[in-house]
Length: 252
Image (cartoon, rainbow, N blue to C red; front, side, top):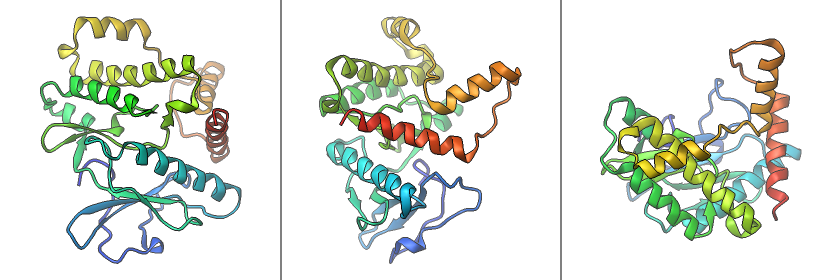
């Protein structure tokens, strides 16, 4: 297991209290663990750290939202399958592990499979035809290379159903996904990009600073002249999370 997480296996007989924790993990990030069932299949267990109070409500929303998004696409051969949830009061989801390696590690060894990104580009269009935009495909950690050299897409926490969006915003969201793929393609295997897609990438790709975290980082660098990026405070993180929630709810 290389791709979806970096944590020890849990063993059989999972209880949510037994999910491993690390003092180095940030409090707002979910805890990821792996369990092997009686059939020998490995499953990812994703649990948020808070289940009570306002944060608990928010994290339960996140778990419920990602569960719903995965449920819409789990039948595709490049997404996680066998999706399920824990008790309603506990912000957790679990799904079958996709055995794979993040594309960044593969590219570092110059081992990107032939036609990998063209297949990924096609898979994202398939995702859109099934009514879901991922919204975080420019993150190389969300793209895995399977043992057979096929692309896989994980982490649907930022995904949105296209039906939620007005028609013009749908077009923007689809383009954002495709530009995320082109960003990775350009970064890791630029030589194989068709000229038309390369031109499209240069014409439309813009680095996104329109999130609370990135905006505050950019503002701080402008004010202080400090080019070094540091972790933001917990308060800023909470504000970022609630801005994200507000964005999602605004389309419901």
